[in-house]
Amino acid sequence: MSPPEKAGGPHLTGTAALVRVMADTAYRSLFLASTAMMASQWMQRIALGWIMWELTGSTTWLGLLASAELLPGLFFGPLGGVLADRMNRKQIVLVCQTAALLISVATGLVVFLGLSAPLLLMALTAAGGIVAALQESARTLLLRDATPRDCLPTGMSMTAISVNVTRFLGPALAGPLVIWPGPASIFWINAAVSLVMIATVLSLRKLHAASAAPAQREPFLRQLWTGLNAASSHSVVTPVLLIFAATAFLVRPVYELMPAFADRLFGGNVQDYSYLIMGVGAGAVIGAVIVTLNAPARPAMMFFWSSLAACLSLVAFSATPGILSATLAATILGFFMCISAATSQLVMVLDTDEAVSGRVLSLWGALMRGAPALGALATGAVLDGMGYRLPLALSGLIAALLTGAAIFLFTRRPGARPGAA
Image (cartoon, rainbow, N blue to C red; front, side, top):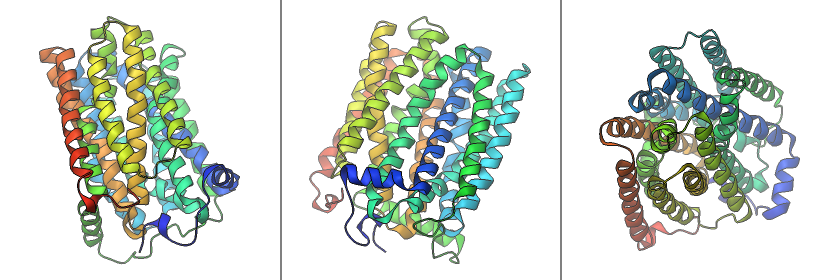
């Protein structure tokens, strides 16, 4: 089967496609609910990070907290990808959102009652990470199923952008709420959004494609192996995944460890922390607008160049002398990180065969969650022992060298430059 954007007749583009997509009731309602859900998840992560920092004052504990949420994605992400390719995607999302609702309520009660403890927070965070990893592929492909077929590239571009904007905009919204009315409020918001997502999925009646893949009866392990093979032997997907993993490990941990940077680098408090994450969020929004208005004909190249710029932005962030310059650097970093992440996901969805798209997308999701967790764990331990600025700069430089080498090799391999790239 061909990649989904190449199947069927011609597609609408530009403003006409955008209007057509957002006029579709199923896509519009699911898109808005899904965007709110992802933003609330990132808001919850910021609240948990600040609570852990107040409890421990340790970057190692921040790294452990990030690992508790993100590392489950390394196993449960691919598992969720296989499930998305062989089961009803609506049912997967409903079950996972119900579990997420219960976890948010439990965490909110723990924080509100003053029962927070590092190990308890890690356990609740790990449970939420498992649920998020299991549903990620099903939710993304459910959005694809709800997209009008003649607007598929536009619909999936919007989906990819929303995933990555909320990674930065959600924390920016969380910053003021951490100050007032307090971290517990964020967990109540997350629970309410889960209810909205459940109601939205239940209301879906007519989709533009079936919500389950046809090859449901293949053995589970064979399906998993087929997805791994498809991702590791593709001339575009494979190099994009490799560089995405490298930058996620070396660059993305700056976000998970931002509470420590606000405190130790700039001697700030929660207000300075909120400035930094709002700066990243503002940059991400600007990046999303750029990608939306200038949909790349070759998303892989936009991914590589934006990744290189993000690496260099991290080096600049490590050298900033005060909170104002750091906020500016964080804005630039958020801008390029958003473009990099959005275009990488776009490659996963649009450049793979539809029959294995859930599994390939789940590998991207596993890297998105697992690589920053491992990076935060390693970086947190290094920062506690070696200081803050030099390790950040070295991480950015190493990632920049790897990305630059990938650009050199990618642009000189004819087989790695198909028109869809």
